[in-house]
Image 1 (cartoon, rainbow, N blue to C red):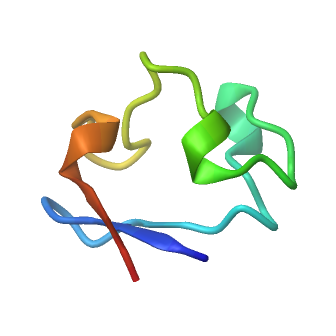
Image 2: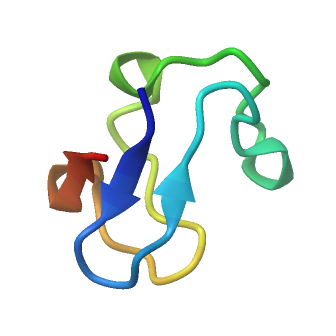
Length: 51
């Protein structure tokens, strides 16, 4: 399941991960570190909703 940032619209896709920030492909949203933030706008995980 993909998650979308409510602030800027960035979509976190677990199949892709966030390699620029050290998040490997295959990392579930629930398994992201608590201090992970949106790579586009910097808000926290609590600002994301399931797509």
